[in-house]
Amino acid sequence: MMVAHMGVISTATFCFLSVSVSRRRRTSSPKSRPFALAAMSNDPIREWILSEGKAKDITKIRPVGGGCINLASRYETDAGSFFVKTNRSIGPSMFEGEALGLSAMYETSSIRVPRPFKVGALPTGGSFIIMEFIEFGASRSNQSTLGRKLAEMHKAGKSEKGFGFDVDNTIGSTPQINTWASDWIEFYAERRLGYQLKLARDQYGDSIIYAKGQRLVKNMGPLFENVVIEPCLLHGDLWSGNVSSDKNGEPVILDPACYYGHNEAEFGMSWCAGFGGSFYDAYFEVMPKQPGFESRRDLYMLYHYLNHYNLFGSGYRSSAMSIIDDYLRMLKA
Image (cartoon, rainbow, N blue to C red; front, side, top):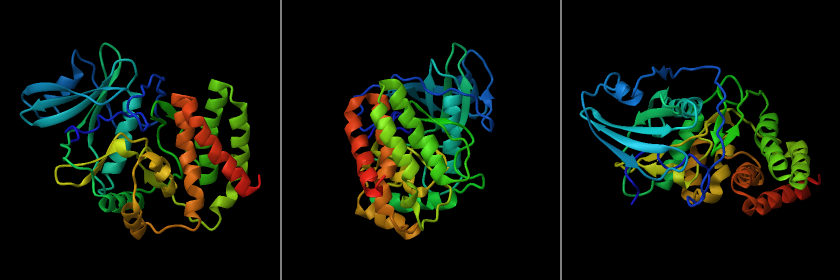
């Protein structure tokens, strides 16, 4: 049975929870701050819950297990429960990126996500986020319902700014650069694959995967011929650990790495998401399949394999290299 809480499965983007994450998250200041930082006090979490949270009494604080980047707690009050994540070493911008993503998904009124309430700094250093507490159900979400609701989110969440997001965020603990671009191929080449390839070169001295990856990046245009690409709101890190269901069996998604991108990029973590035929059938009823979908699927997986390589080491290198080599042969590049 799933633990009954929301958002505590680690924000790390990997399939095996036994792997620990130690890399530093990006803490750059966002350009816009619709989530105002909580005022500093001796206990800003308690202060917010007992004021804006409309609670008169906090009856119990329970630690919630499962995360490996942040500490998580359930605050039980006379006004209901709140889910709180804290990090003692990272500033508020990390949680602000998460809150902006959750809010964007919440506002589509499609698939259920925990509603974010407050992001703030801790007086002793670090930061926190307070969000809606959602009670998990005993079973995983229905695949067809998940596919349909995810497609509804993609259809409803569009951006007039192009591809990107208002702030940079993280994919696991790797910085994810979301500077706006008008062209999807350029965005994916530079801010996704190109960024990960440079990390691999700088971190491991891996000039081989860098050189081959750059060849792919420069020659992948034909994979997108006759494809209409709109900037859709993506969860960005959709694997099985970030998908659950509420008490009514409705799907819930959490711990996002949101940005606006090609809807097919959402399936980049499908190698550890467990999406089946009923998921894709329901999804494509709402968002019709584009020509060449199957030929692009591994290209979107490559981003996440490269990220796993950069986070967790050489065990993921062969998978990333195999995808690159296959595409270079296909494209004769």
